[in-house]
Length: 266
Length: 306
Image 1 (cartoon, chains in turn red, blue):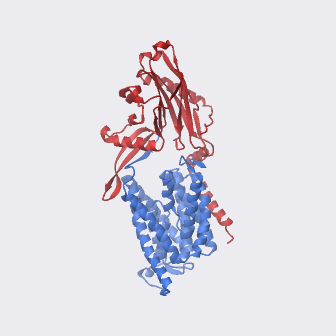
Image 2 (cartoon, each protein chain N blue to C red):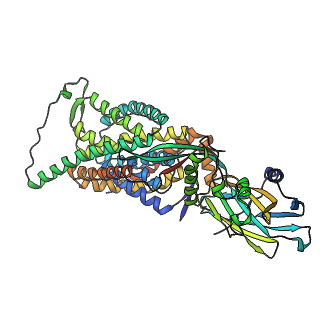
Image 3 (cartoon, rainbow over the protein chains, first blue to last red):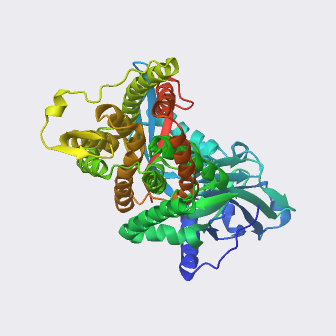
């Protein structure tokens, strides 16, 4: 699988990167050791172009754990990396058999469901830290806890359906031994972005745990955008929809006429 | 080889799409149906979002219908006068149909209603057509063809505004094709299809047009219906994927040419029996889907973005 060529992020991207790093620290309460260890991380590409020959790509996430402490004070370090796609509202409908025919009966709407969610860790997340902290940090597809107006117990099978179907489409993944440590401090992992990856603003989050405590967290933005002829067509369809419709019809009429001219002699 | 579709936002296999376009184009040129009732489910099956499939298929049908009409026109098999009157009725009907569709959508259950109306209409039309055409085939084989009365009189022949349709060899009230056009328009507005598979049998059995003229004339009026649908979807939903449409067209226009050739080699009752079989197969598939336990009882749909 080839890596997509990375284009330089514009100044706006840098600003967003800076802002998200700042907010990530305030969002996740860190333990006392936080000041001693910091993560330095990067992604192989912050801008992924979806061109007309896009067949999916592989994202390389890597970094190092920097520590001011002496080596003997080290506990056991664990790392969890999450890549999240743009959030969408999703309606889940359930079919029931009524008079022999399967029809939609119940439905639950969920808000802010990530359209993409990939998790990588160096060992199963349940072994890394407690269930409470996993739930709080929303680590793992099953712990995303989508918002809905329907009470938890009732909406749970509907949530499960989202995770199940997104996993089948390769949009949700949970790879529990995908992070490789090179020595004590260097780490790397790859995350597959399939051909059907939704375009939009993504975020990659890095969580560093020591003996089950979150001691450092970082996030960096990632943009997946259409480009080339696909981008042009998409923009044209949305910005000049009337012209687009007329153009589509002219192409169709022309294509039909050309074929009949070519096959005239019979 | 895969191609990324900018509006559908998915990568598809180029040759799969070309093959589908060619096959549907062939059927279109042969039977005078747009093929939307076959193409739309096929596209959804390969992963194209349903809204994009419906809108893009309309665009593709325009191309294959133009290709087919020109081929039929050269053979003198298009009744333009009849086509235009059917079309006027069709436009009025499709406005009513779209309005009904919007109401159904707000109630929910629109998918079920579409499936049910497909099953009912395809089943009835396919079944009647199948028995009629098979009977005709058997009679031909036995050589016991009853010479049809040149002129049968029903109450409909008493309707006012009589018009002469030379190509169709008919002298009937203009209200007939107008009403049929409107009825098919309502159906196609609700079911989101060109309505060829309803229009063709209606022209054969209700209007009494010769099968050869029916196919060209049906394609002629489908062109205008699908041009309208493409334009409306482009403006309202932005779901017409030109990339996908061009791929489908490039093979379906060729398929339509060959379909027309095959079609003209067959007799009316042979064509009708084949079309009725096709309609019955689609009907059986839809009915089966309604009754069989689905793989996953849950379905997702995105309502709003970020």
